[in-house]
Length: 322
Ligand SMILES: Cc1cc2nc3c(=O)[nH]c(=O)nc-3n(C[C@H](O)[C@H](O)[C@H](O)COP(=O)(O)O)c2cc1C
Image 1: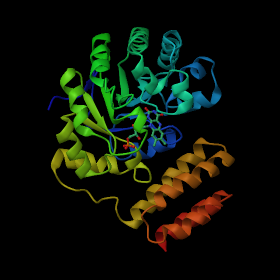
Image 2 (image 1 turned 180 degrees about the vertical axis):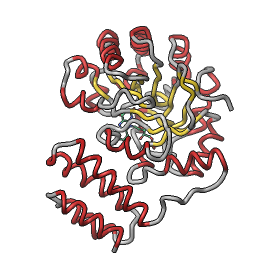
Image 3 (image 1 turned 135 degrees about the horizontal axis):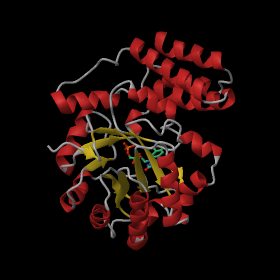
Image 4 (image 1 turned 90 degrees about the vertical axis):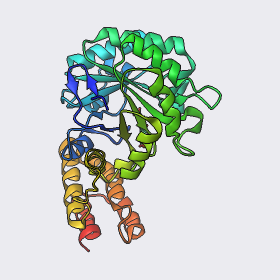
């Protein structure tokens, strides 16, 4: 299999962390980074907010100068996307990604995200504007199409490749599916066959077996992991080792290891956010680490009512050391 090359950077792993709004913040990326040199994406940042210098948006781009982090831009106006691209580059971004997959109503209503798949001309203009605005690699993330009758990902992929996009990720669902049904990895193959740049398969890849199956069915160059990494940041390393060596890693699977990982993740959050925000977000993160532990349902209730930092760590201790 050909190496995945973005500009002059050769990716050491075919496993990539997905962009996830309100999830892949800097603390999350820091904990995933401990498990390997994976390409990662920021949460999507609204191009309008980037150029208006909105503080919350700029916080999302903290550490944008990490050598393996890509900033994902969302928007529908070519000139704004280009300006946001330039600003991200000035902030140190090494890679940029264009969001053409987001199905959320608010985004789609403004013609951005997956709505761009319905408007190939505008999609092309945005791609050209962003690629021409910056000297760094630009990638694209999209779905199979708007709906089952319009699975035009291969067409957009060709447009993107000829405009200079360097890698394409396909979430194997249409917009109309939102997150329902199962991702169709074999449909991703049509994109792989349409272009010569790397294609990454995404959707419902949660472990070694699903990664292998997705790679076989799509013939993609790599896999992108989203929800599978929630509360399991080590899963990217497990999948990476399996792809490379065919062996299953269980290094982080003891309760003690999970406890220490969750503890570090929460510490990173406390460093990054003001306390009230950290506590609120920590409830969600704790919940993910709690899934699958023996009496998870008992703790869910307690986690939801946490108000203080010591309470976060007390309950974490209880979950994993009890
Ligand atoms: C909470 C959440 C937030 C997401 N935010 C983004 C985003 O900001 N940009 C994007 O391109 N996709 C976003 N996605 C989609 C994921 O990147 C991914 O395409 C999708 O979840 C399918 O992959 P998975 O089954 O591995 O999770 C988000 C998904 C979730 C669950």
